[in-house]
Length: 550
Image (cartoon, rainbow, N blue to C red):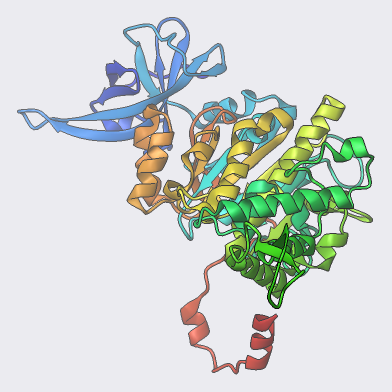
């Protein structure tokens, strides 16, 4: 049982839906032993029914009466009710008026965090910020089976937080078996940060990535090969006709199956066939059926220009430029024509032969910006469709998947530009439908206000670290419950590694400190002054240029 609070000189003077006000005559007496009160400390508001309302201190005011006497008014946000040692979020069981208020003892706070989640469901990556001896557990199933948002400005510890969560997930086991656990995590790493944190990860950079163009859907294909701003129906129709024709020609199925092939069928087609088809249409002349009756051409067939004669020149030039662009070899080169559908999936899911891995890191730093959205879109869509068809085939999801989008504002911004459309559609689809098929998102960003609202609105677990931009602060505040308004005011003042942990998985909103990583991502600040103080260093420019030109 929780300790009965001693009679303290405190009185509840207001009970509001999202705020409790407590008047205290002597603040120094309103504490337990040597535990001083701070913003973020917990209180227990009691009644006569053995029920306690747990609240977190958000503000305190000092009022002075006409005689110069001071009275302290503490404001606290209600978090949940405690009845018979069982904590329940929310609730309205507190009898009015309350009997009294008292600080919640450290052991009682610890008991709430430890007893509210079953042992088998506990997942830990942080401690209570105001008392590092208290471990803050989340319900691991509720944490990972719903979408997660981690936001924080540069230097707030966001990347280390992502790494720590994934390291603990990779190492979690329910038994003494040897080898890998059954976690499946794909990280979209735009700044080459996470390889340093996961030495045994399946690392796919621009030199290893093979992404077959023939698995692109119609929207992705047209974004890549067609000038979408020109709105040229001739280009689209010619391209679509050529793609379908090549898919049917290269198909090894019977006639009946070939007749079912359509624009979005995930089947191989030869991109050079498409180019040849466009070139033929651009220079096509058609016999009229008549002959010249006289002159130099007497007896020769009369011809007329085809309907697309000379109208596809720009399209052909764009197609040739893409095919010949060596930067796009990972997408359009010979390897992309030879890799199978199964091999493509295995490389992203960590099922490479003799080299299985829980975590796959897709290093996007070398991907040309003009195809970044398409690259993210195709991989995301393939993984979603894999999970969809896996569950359709097996009924149960036995290999749930977490997709981690680092610096997500780079490829799913709040923008109507056509170049972001593909990745927006793919990631928003996962946000809206992914949980049903065992695929969830972890969205990490330093600019949450610039990310598609559709994606953030689907997140159920938030880790909000220091945010200094007012737009980002206000955006995050709008996403969180009104009762947490005072807690979110602390966002610009949080230390590195400190965070507001909120969501379905945690017993109550908590100000926490993230545990240190085993291995940190390569995102730490560069110590400029320390390096500048060192002796002048020579640079091997040829090596830098060689890497650049590759």
